[in-house]
Structures are given as C-alpha cells and as structure tokens.
Image 1 (tube, one colour):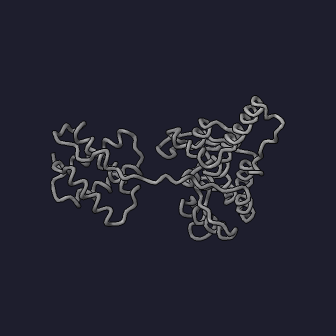
Image 2 (cartoon, helix red, strand yellow; image 1 turned 30 degrees about the vertical axis):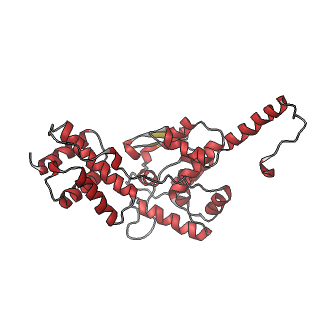
Image 3 (cartoon, helix red, strand yellow; image 1 turned 90 degrees about the horizontal axis):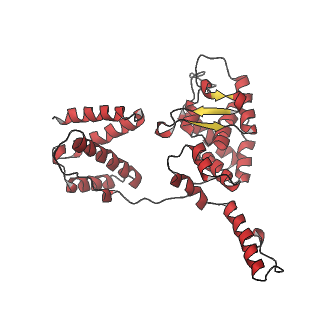
Length: 303
C-alpha cells in the first residue's frame, strides 16, 4: 500500500476514534514533517531512524515536550500500521525514547494579586471572562467557545462542551461570577452570534472574541496592575483555593475536567492548608498523650 493511502486511512482512523480536529491536524503535520525528513521508506524506518530524527529535532532547539508530541504522533501511526493495516514490521519507536520532562508546579495567584488584578478590570465583558476563569476554572479556549446555550443561569451553572480532550463537563457559578456574568449579559449587544463574548470595537465588532484577543486583554490588565499573570494562572488559582478550603481532590478533578487524578494531585504539592491543619491537630493529640499537654504548640506564624 502506498504511504499516501496509509496516511489517509490513518486520518480516517483518528476520526473514527472521535479525535478532535486540532489533534488530527497536529498528527498529520507531524507525520508530514517526518516523512519528508526520512531518507528511507516509512515502513523501513528503524530504531536508528527515530533516534536520528530526535537528534534532528534537538538541533532545531525544539523543547522536550514538543519532541515528545512528535514521538507520540509517530508512535500512534506505527501502531496503526502494525495493528490495523497488519504490516509485518518491527515497531521503530521504543517507549524509552521519550525525553524526560521537568514537572514545574502550577503557578497560582496569591489573594493580594487577585485583588490587585480585578481592581483594574472595569470593563464588564472582561470582568465576566476572567471571573469565569477564576471561579469556574475555565481554560481560555473554553471561555472563547462558551455559547449562550451553555448557560443555565436559573441553576447558577454552565456547561463546557468539547473541552480539552473533547470532554464535556458542568461547572458552577459562585455568587461573584454569577453577578459578573449577569452584569455583562445586560449590556451585551443583541446579536445572532451564539458565542457569549463578543468583540466590542474595531472592524470585527460583534464577532466572537478569539483566544488571542482574551490573552491580549489579560496582558493589558496585568501590566496595568504591575503583575505578571497569564490566563491559565486563574485556573490554577481556583484549584489551589478549593484545595485549601478542604474540597476533595475528586471534586476538583471533575470541575477542572482532568482525566487523571494524578494531574489534580499536583496542586497538593504547592500549598495544602488542610494538610497543615491536620498535622497540627494530630500533633497536638500526640503531645497530649505523651504528657506535653501544657506545652504551647507552635502556630503557623511562629514557624
């Protein structure tokens, strides 16, 4: 079978698996890059071919995470050739080829930074957008794609359709997020556009606000407040605040739309006041049993 036919069949295979258009486009671009680079027929690629391709990507100064995405795409294609097309060949992409990644902790905003940021946001649309990120944990893409039909205001909730990984979920509106959204909807221009947030000025006025536009507004307000903030940090802040308020990890996982609980557990490594409170409570009991009940225990401020 010609390699072009195999790639087209693989594209159909990904569609049948209900992969998002974004995922399929990235996989196809990666395969195109690899096929054009490789100096051997794709079915004759060996382990050495893959290692040479990794060196090629490193020479281009691509980040390890990006290179791993390339390897995942190529590995998936060879999985398809071997398992679906039943081509007799040795899988050239070994699991050990994945580059080791650093695991930076999620960056969240402290209370004073949140106050400073929202103190400079007077625009009703922008305040509603960023409040949804802070209180509902929405990603910037989810805010841009939010439709009027997804709002369930009587129940103070909204539906996130086709979130990351094509997953749907329900999130709930806190009092301040609900108020900010209602305040914006009252002044939102009448439009046939189904998206909630619209461009307010310029030649694209009335069109849906894009991701880049939302990020630009965040950059504007961050500079105005003298802070260095990204949209995604508001989502991290929401998760951290819920954890410190004793919310269960499984609850936070559902609200954020994480597939694996391990992803949510990263927030426990940042700051977990529940662990801190449990420690001092348990240690007080330990000290009491050992005759130290009259000794003053340390508080957080004294450490």
